[in-house]
Image 1 (cartoon, rainbow, N blue to C red):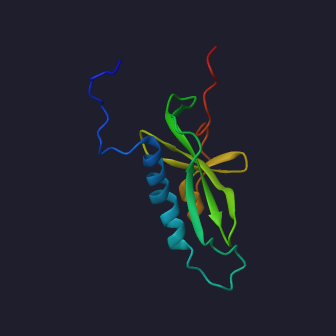
Image 2: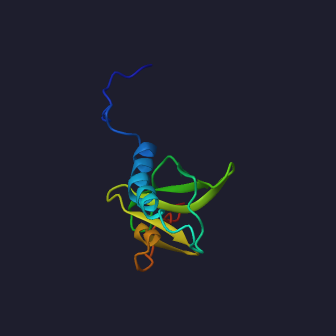
Image 3: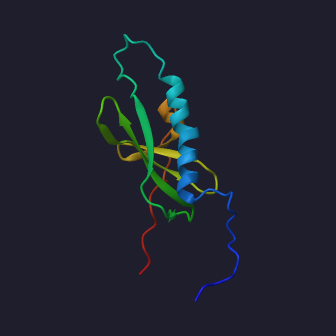
Length: 131
């Protein structure tokens, strides 16, 4: 049986996946692209030819503090092959805050552009499942 109850979601409102991809594009990929114009003679890794965002789970995950987030990964391409998970992190739904993983810790995304930021405790980690 079909329901004729109108949906609360607007047709103009992006899906969760689209919203997360747009947020990562604006908050991580654009700042990295702007920074990539460095010297050819640097010893740093050359910038990739292309970056793409993948949302790794299309549903919200709740962290230990009860905040909802969406995990993502950024893949890079230097030549013809893609390298997955060059950047891994999450974006929080309510605030739009972006965090990226380095080692075992998560940092605010500003870390990627050279800002001196401290690791953020308890972010991007799912709360234990209730039994």
